[in-house]
Length: 70
Image (spheres, one colour):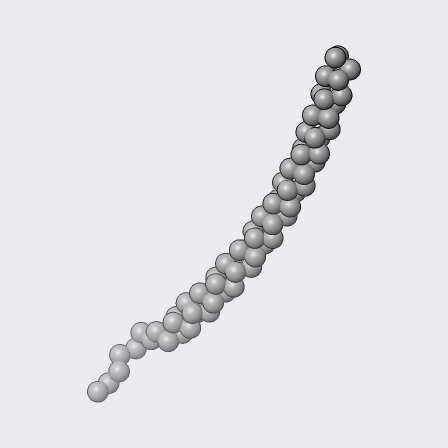
């Protein structure tokens, strides 16, 4: 009876090791996806900031302090 329990316990341990490895693989995959999303967000925000900087520079060039004679 103890041998049977021992085999059952070994099977449970093997199953848990397999599940643990699968979960580790999923975690690694999720971290890679998060890194890619972060990289993409940085690229998107930097392009938005570049456009904003150009817009601010353009508006600054359009402003004049001289009054127009009518």
